[in-house]
Length: 364
Image 1 (cartoon, rainbow, N blue to C red):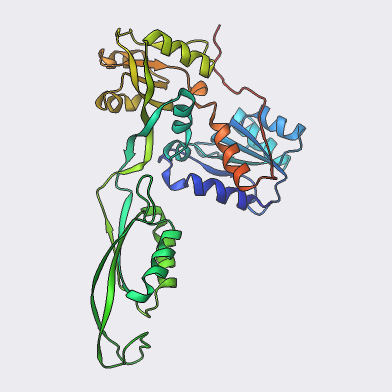
Image 2 (image 1 turned 45 degrees about the vertical axis):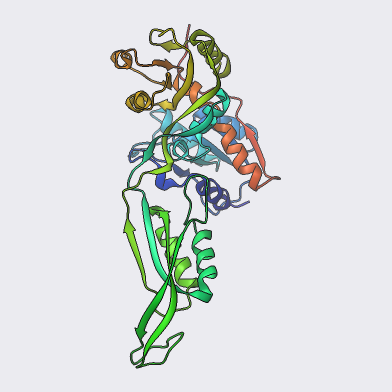
């Protein structure tokens, strides 16, 4: 198995374009053309993880958190980041990370947390903005299906739980080929009228080059007329955090105890109880305090996340309960997402979970 094949599958699921500006997801160490015998799945790619890979003769570490966030100017082993990178390079171990891009996609980190809690009707809490584009093109009627299928295959036409979405309007196109033209229909120097279909569909902006290539390859015309529009619609399929409903309302203490059991939380910090049942649940894996207002706005009874500061707990203002279950604890099931992606695509590829607990926060 080539490393680039594995990366392609992971990035098809969680495109790097969806990572936050501060993030550093992607291939951090390794040659994309290297042969990979197996993968070790983890949350953090620390020295202990590299040691585990060495012991088990594993050539790829796939982590949720990137070991490198800022630029490294020296590789002298002065800190755990440098030592991890040096050891990985020395032993020819590749390191790949999928972080906020994996947080943002359907069936990513937050959807996995929702699944563990048992939420239904799960939706993105804070959809990504200004991510969508609209393609408008004009196709001869007999070639509509071919062109549609090409742009759909390239990733256009997906809206929520629907795909192959488009709008088609019949009309008449006109053109006159000039000297040097080689028109698909009509004659050079003569105005031609052609029955065409106006095809409209949307796509996420990071796929624009791929979709235009598909359009130009599938369209029969020598010169293809098309328009690309930026649209203001939120992309409800992509974003940070999720919100959903429990099948049945639960008492607050019962729900919090259930959280502790599911996520094996030793210390669960929360705001005062409000003495009302919990049914609508908002959550964000990792550091999600910035989404508290979104959780309040959508009418959630509780917001589950991590890394809240003291004064941020006051911001709940008795409108909901904040439950801080810990950063590592909230994201620990991310390894299962990697496993599901890879084993579905490569059933015979050796994938194993790390046995190391890399949580740097200990509770006495």
